[in-house]
Amino acid sequence: MTYETSQTSTPSAADTQVSPSGRRPGWNKVPEVTVHFWVVKVLCTTVGETAADLLDEKAGLGLTGVSVLMSALLAVVLVAQFRTTAYRAGVYWPAVALISVVGTLISDNLTDNLGIPLETGTTVSAVVLAIVFVVWYRHERTLSIHHIDTTGRESFYWLAVLMTFALGTAAGDLVSARMVLGHWLSALLFALVIAAVALAHFSLGLDAVWSFWIVYLLTRPLGVSIGDYLSQPTGDGGLGMGPVVTSALFLTVILGLVVHLAVTRKDEAQSRCAARHAA
Image (cartoon, rainbow, N blue to C red; front, side):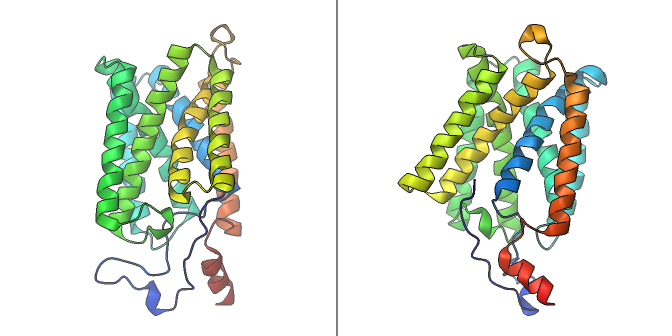
């Protein structure tokens, strides 16, 4: 699914310099929203669920240990991401994969460690995400991912991404638990809702920015349902592949796609690619 078309202009030599406000004209820090974007995003989401389960249950780190480890790794990768001057597939997507794990762990800690009901955890995550969007818009006057060209906007972007993962995990678990649909039916339900949003955008003119963020949120429970369906035992409605095999499979596919994107630059702004090839 594609939404907004980037309005990024071809950068000149002067454009590559950071302005006093911290803005880098002509350079965006996130990829174009293409089919590749959604495929890798769902894969990262699935890995976020299975990897968290793997480290918690199989590696014996416990929920707290996993949370500390993955948060530290995410901090390191985000430092690298913030230091880049433009979108780099090899830095951006590892950050998404790790923030997916941390977002899952936020929801799991609220439920398992603190004993907070899923309804409350979902509500809290939704309120925090809403606050992030309100503050982001009041400060920047846009929520578009095609204008992530300052440190402030990038900070808001990653905070919003983190909270979509936390909210998506809690909401997905809540739907599965209360509706008793099972893993594959839950995945089908979220896929249908995503399709409805896409139809509303392309046929009814639903705002591109809000269409993006709604689908971005919904792909989280979609990925969780897919991951659970593949990894959970057959007696629990899964295929019994286990978290090790499922995580390894999806990580391999993600690695292959990220390498492909890094080489072909298919998810970079058209104008930036043209400028590089002309150089």
